Length: 138
Image 1 (cartoon, rainbow, N blue to C red):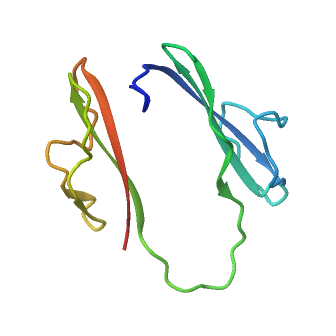
Image 2 (cartoon, rainbow, N blue to C red; image 1 turned 120 degrees about the vertical axis):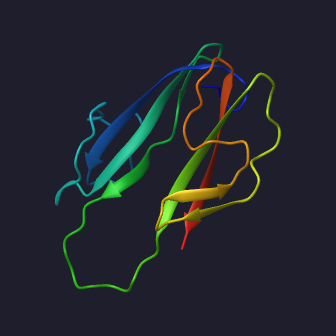
């Protein structure tokens, strides 16, 4: 895997924190590398990543963000939307400077059309692996 600026990524460690606080930093106490569970008293599940690169600067920390929050069963609400974040991958000996072509995602069949030359699975090989992500909503 490679970063946006071409550095190799040697490791990514995810950290998790369930808390009632909405003011969390990477220095907050209680972070673990095991997923915690949001509860009635710890409403928010936070996540950040420690990314280790193969060249300087070698370590980067992402900003903590809420990835889940506790909710009780309530009255039925309005119908929601389908949402999916889809990644596509491509290996190349040279830098890829263009993004994949427009694509269409079909929720009912979990299928993707378009994005020619890119794959939903990480291709085998030793060349640099590029990833592109898209959000689909219906």
